[in-house]
Image (tube, rainbow, N blue to C red; front, top):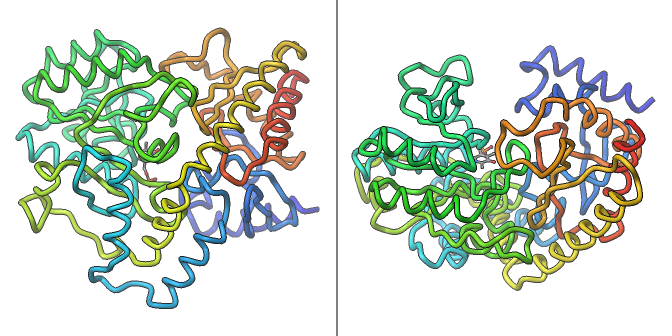
Length: 438
Ligand SMILES: Cc1ncc(COP(=O)(O)O)c(C=O)c1O
């Protein structure tokens, strides 16, 4: 019965928006079925228009590290909204948010607030080109950096390639300014710099690539990339739209440690892009770095960048309340505890239940690995055969009251609102679905 509600809404939406959605993955093309319409959400739960309740592990694709609608953030937003929705002028809240962000990145001293991760990346790339006087950007296959034209490219064949547009509407000239290399391959980095070194403005990387599976890179690989950028005068951009403030109060480059589920990277980038958590569920993102680079931005410098909604007072209030809640470390301790319990549950299931899947986990970021052998380090190592079982497991978990991101290639997120019992149940339900031939 409740499915009818979703089907009716989807039918209406299909007449109004391309594929009925405002962002592609919401159409559930990857798992099939009708997208579920969400009415409200609180804590770990999302509530559907058909009266359903799900424990949610999508968490709005990452912003909701405190859970859905955390009272402190909602109160801050309500208070800010009552004082005015937008001023297009400077506010105290923007200063406070920049200060809070930079506490997490003590080697940087400037922040520019924007609204989306895409904008943050576009701004970082423009800054890198302006700073170096160079054109090309090195990116890595399987990493996502928003939908700016030059980032919508993928590798063709060969070790290192000129980008080929991955989307219609990206000009060949723009795509060719992006060089794409595979992850997990130092020789590909060397080849890119050997061929294009004097024209590479920046290399951009997700410190923990989390947009095409969870492709944890070796720390040596990260250090190699850092050293190559330094040697050739290119900037290193860590795109931390997902990872920023995720594993601790600051960036993945410095914060990841063994006890968070991954080896320390120990790398300081030249620029960082942030989004998701720094907006606490509202549209805030940022590019941060040293004054020597950021002060090129208008009107301090010649690099133009602006935004009517940049630093919006209501959105900034959500970011401030979220970072304030993360400051004392209790949320990260809770997330670490959830992670440990989840690992234990998964390990026990793998032994007890033939066919139970492994998961990759870094801090509160989890991804079910449905392929054979060791977890992959490159996008190419993920077989497309993971789609079928994931899609079926997704549908079964949905019926059991658990909402996973609707794609075999997307990661899930634990939040402060999740409980030990819930993450154990996730491990058991997913293992049951896969091992039972879901
Ligand atoms: C690493 C990374 N960079 C950039 C973006 C783009 O951010 P937005 O969707 O806010 O434009 C995303 C979005 O998921 C992301 O994961």
